Image (cartoon, rainbow, N blue to C red; front, side, top):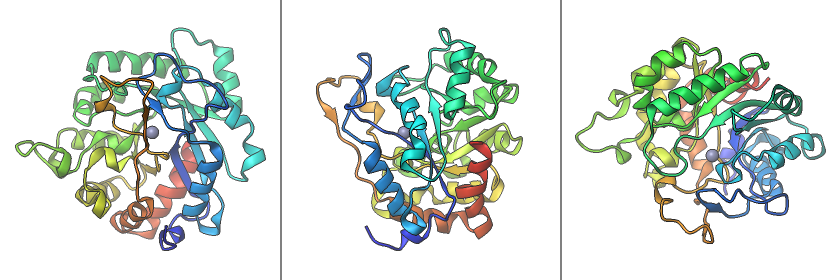
Length: 311
Ligand SMILES: [Zn+2]
């Protein structure tokens, strides 16, 4: 890695989307849709320090990854141990069975630093059922609405936000839209469908953000574009427009260790380890710094908005 981008993650920055996979800490779920490689905490801290000014890890939001299912044991132990491995803040986003969890369990998660629930809607590669997503969102939102600072986090294709606009509008909690809200660069859209800021879902996402109902996470760009060599430059018009229209509603996540593509998982053998993607994070950060524009919006995206989000 070069040192140029290391100057670009400011002091106090938040990486709002990372995972840890470590078989020495506990087993994967037998019903997982894929088996990832190992990504222990020590590697995460090295990665984060390397991208950050002063070579110390940024604040981190550890997101429960789908291979652990509803078992948040490892996430909670990483939150609990945080003071022993970083001077920054560490928060968690859990995945739970909402029909089985009790209030006491949610409160104890809160005390350890969990600040929201992730709803998995497309990890397995199947098509998305909008009504199922809607009912899961509503139930989950009402379950967590009194927990201070808790939010829902969802990765879904952008077009479903047209159908879910009214639902989100009436939710009692904020929704974090993962991976650019599912928006895609031209390299991932068919020729005859509208591209860029004209694509389906874009206007709904912007409107929901302007109404303070959602935050858009700039993350997982490789899920939205195949243009890795240029740092996903077909996403430039989308990210520039988001920075212009909703500068107060953006956060950033590296999505380290960059798990593979859900779409390829339907026939996968769980005995085969799915490799992580090799991602040029410094090139991504260089591009993002330029596309986001003003220093003020950059600071909001990297520092101020996530700090206010993961209280
Ligand atoms: Zn992820």
